[in-house]
Length: 368
Ligand SMILES: O=C(O)CCC(=O)N[C@@H](C(=O)O)c1ccccc1
View 1 (cartoon, rainbow, N blue to C red):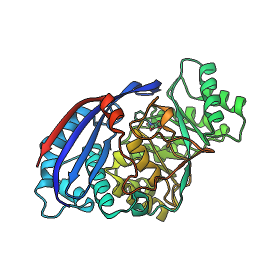
View 2 (view 1 turned 120 degrees about the vertical axis):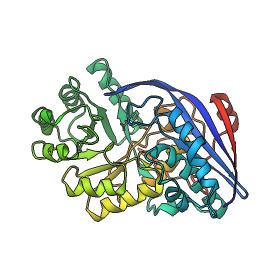
View 3 (view 1 turned 120 degrees about the horizontal axis):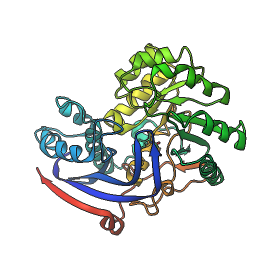
């Protein structure tokens, strides 16, 4: 593929409601999109970095900078450019996996559009629609939480994920179980808010039949999670810790997790995400698709990934309306608790020009 130009497009999308996690509250998303223009087609990628380095070390301004100064120039030096050449060409730059993922996705989207092939097919998808879960933030009160969960269950979500932190964990889980019963698929996500000294406290979640406890400890505390697994019966799932297929293999071998949340932005792109899926499948470890409040662009690609055979748990692949009143693509709408895998070439969706213009805050054209 011959690139003729790359656009860095910044958009601001208000959330339908504040989204609170153990590391902060999001009221709107400042999103960096990448559009690559090749001779035969163009492609889009969404950078999932947040505005502040609170989920991981990455943040949007840094992603825009590293793309402009290092990542995009490195690609223009390549004799032959296709999606599989991107990660090797960028490997010399340390970290910045979300920025790298967005660029690789845009190249992959353009390449697949040129060939008339879908991302789902490219990754090895085996389903045409995927079961959807929903992530529920930390709330000001238990009644407010129960109302939110009630609404999501009424919308048809097949799995509830509750954000937890010290002081908001056992009681909210108990309240949801008491109100909605034992059959609701329920899991919790701590976003690294606990320490291994909290093992006995976290074991108090065991009686509630949770699917998993997601990332209770620091992302670098792999052995801490392995130790925790000896005290807590509920399966441990890792998110922030799993930054590559190698990290997944190590964490599994060390007994640090029984389940993995795969987020393409966190691991450097959809090709690495597929490799993590394969490593987990080889070890009998179920995976599910995580989310980073993506617009319809990232959402489309995540739904394609979630259709791979090893994705046996509902993901955070919620409808567009979970976060945005109006998406920048045709909205993803829940149908009987599922989202359909896009069938168009590439990621299968593109921004609606008028809608994109409404939310655009900046645009930078990188000539190559
Ligand atoms: O449904 C979604 O897209 C969000 C799912 C979700 O809870 N994401 C969490 C996470 O830690 O997994 C998150 C929220 C905000 C920022 C980063 C990550």
